[in-house]
Image (cartoon, rainbow, N blue to C red; front, side, top):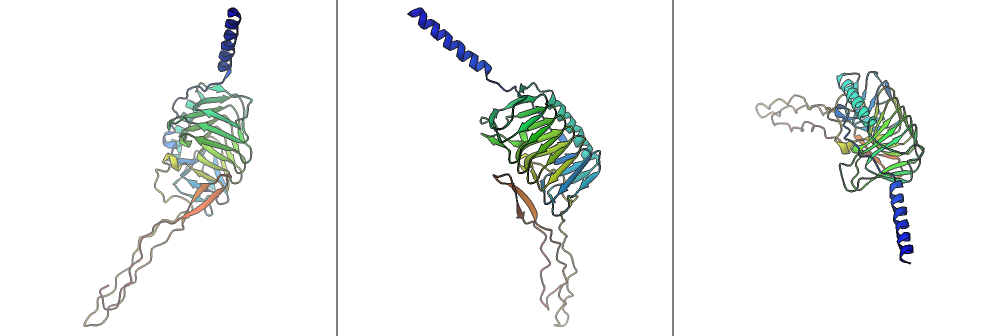
Length: 313
């Protein structure tokens, strides 16, 4: 009887041990830094194209290409624009470095499985070829605000319509990196989190939203009524003013009135009212993945105060 029970216990211990061994564990991810690419929410290699009232909360750039199409009103770029200048070129160089660091991460293999309907801990995960997201992927930082998630994808990244990436327990979109070996396509109304670093191109279908960045090394970035924001990461260190669709407030001016003489009233001042910029729109990602555009009034200079006759101008 004793020997029989001992054998049963040994069998249970072996089965439990095998179960734990079979459970996939994430490889520890090394730090991935974007350098001068960090202020950009959209950085393209050949061209960037937009259709509709997309909102970019961060910088827009292209290099070595020069084409930026469709980023005037009704689109809004709450950041600076760099078309094949030194800033965009340096950002592309740092993007290449970050891409290569992510590509060399040791990773747990998820090849052949859908990213949807699962919860993953911090670490690096790999796909030998394409990766598909259908439904919700949850990333759990387990209370560590610095937890990093790296996804290495051999060829393409595709999301089905209305798919989502959900961050819990302190996970940040700033620390989620998608290294894509060719191109990425996000389906309509997808709610996505993290920084897509694609070797070729990145395309977003209608009303897809991204908390993070779209960084394409050689190809184009294509938007259709999208919200792209990395405000949680402190983006856009460049001064505004080179941004399409944004008006810089005009400094109020105008000469003062002539002082009254001999009791006569002076001529009222003719101050010129400052130029009032259109309200910038800040995109808000809703739960169903659509983008809601909320007006955020900008502060302009106060117009010249009216003057009463008889007082100095």
